[in-house]
Image (cartoon, rainbow, N blue to C red):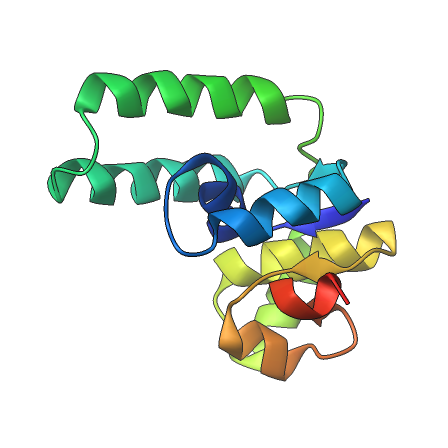
Length: 133
């Protein structure tokens, strides 16, 4: 079991240079948990693909719905106090702190390529490459 950030979810579902890594990660650990913010962040990633004309709006909506269904039972709420403490202490956004808070709460790793999170939370955040070692 891991906490996956929105980028890892996007890497898995969308073509790109990290898709093969994301596929290997889900083979190694198929149980990905996410905080509630992931769905909104994933929608925003899809919107970027639509605006860049790399994905049709209809396909983006269908993928968003599919991802929502996949993660419906894997979305876990976290404490607002914990999120605010983590964000305040680390200087990261509340959005990013949600992933860290969930990983801490569940006692699992947060798999991410987010450099600030990797630097600020080295005991809980692990890069895609290092997770596969």
